[in-house]
Image (cartoon, rainbow, N blue to C red; front, side):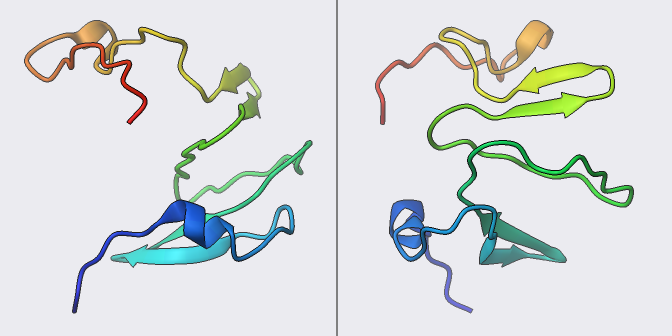
Length: 96
């Protein structure tokens, strides 16, 4: 099996509809999907699994019973939080 990177911008250019996830990769028993979103979505749960959200542009707010989680980090957030240690990365504001 050949391994190659996925150009997310190119994949996003293939569709414009909102709330219609597209599979871009598979990892073991998981599908990696991309989706365009705007506005609110239906309240739901996934009892048997977790979800990963990578926000490429804008801001995503997840409304939980215990409060909202805003998925975008403000400038200067440390990657290891309050744990610290040798895996703590220095700040890199380079917009790679």
